[in-house]
Image: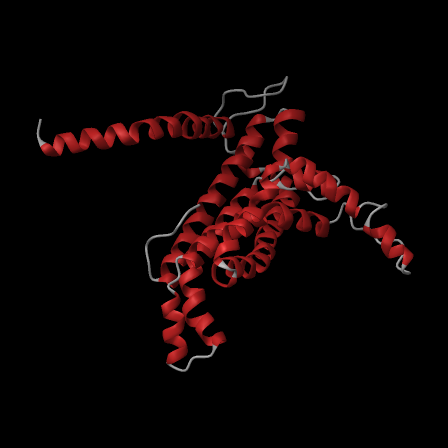
Length: 286
């Protein structure tokens, strides 16, 4: 056996298990959904074999769910970024080294509790006996916070903030502080050093965090359902309705295929932006 053949065999053995796993649980289900999307709804519900693009032509019927998702998901990711970047910057650069790991652990602590439990806590906080009750005591009655887009955005930021912080923290932690010192020695102000040195070098982490949060939000179901009160629909809510209640599998599959296409587009754009602005073709993933 030649050295080249041995290397190929070792590579195949290393990649084989993960490739089989992805094929079984990612590629094959997507192929099934793709086949369903060009079918028809059976009279009793479910899937009936056919070849038609009628389901895709009917996508505007769920335009509200699409628009809510395409607007609130990027906006939610943006607000996550506004909170996450200063937090990650402090953890990676300003926080004392002996307390850094403890502070990073505190960022991850919310993941130890179910998202369902944490979202129910926000239902109480934003409900009539929570913040609206306190606002009524100071002369602001009839303030409705729950079942609004604002409540959904608040739940999104709270639920997905750690996923935005960690990639940015990893990028900032790798920052060579000598670059900042050199920038200061050359007469640059702290603000200019940040925009010319720190921010460009942390863009791969920013792109990763924004892409990760946005992709997960595109399929979000729980937060809009609980904090939106059935008034703020995401694509995830539409899919649950079509697959489990209406049993219109072809239409739900067409929406799912469209959603996957949007996710692939977002990943491609995010990675290209990271490569262009950071001047590198390697993006750190957490």
